[in-house]
Length: 164
Image (cartoon, rainbow, N blue to C red; front, side):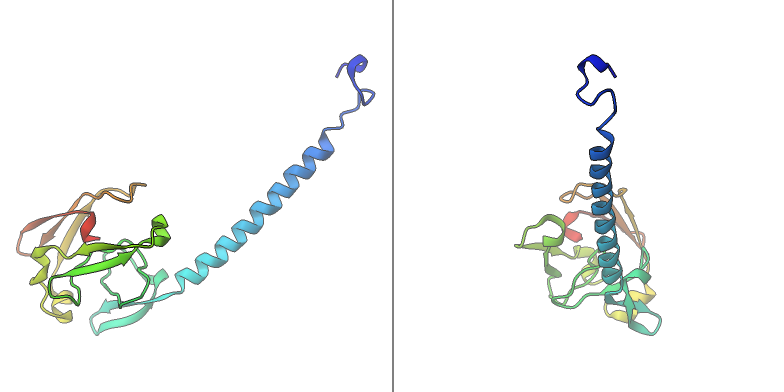
């Protein structure tokens, strides 16, 4: 520090205000992280219905794993990226609200691939038949998807964003 141009007599005075700013910023970040953790815990304790050998049973979102088959009822939140295998509509259509992802409140059209429409006859059939799904790695692109599903009969089906 150059004493001849210093207004503080050569003593550093920036440390106190800088320390206060850093401390306040750290406290704000801590409070945000605690709130996020509380919200995550609440979200992960939400319930869905997971397919087991005994049929669909209630399950917490935190207990879901890749490849689990879940049943979603009208008005329920969807716990993860989900491939539509069957819907209550005869034509396999569904409308999904994505406001938690992109902020848009309008309903988005999604559909079951035609090959799945009659592949699974009922819930027991879903448990007994196998489908191998190959897909791209997670990425920030909400409106594009590339993947495929291979049915146990060997038929391979291309999948798009409309199937999720």
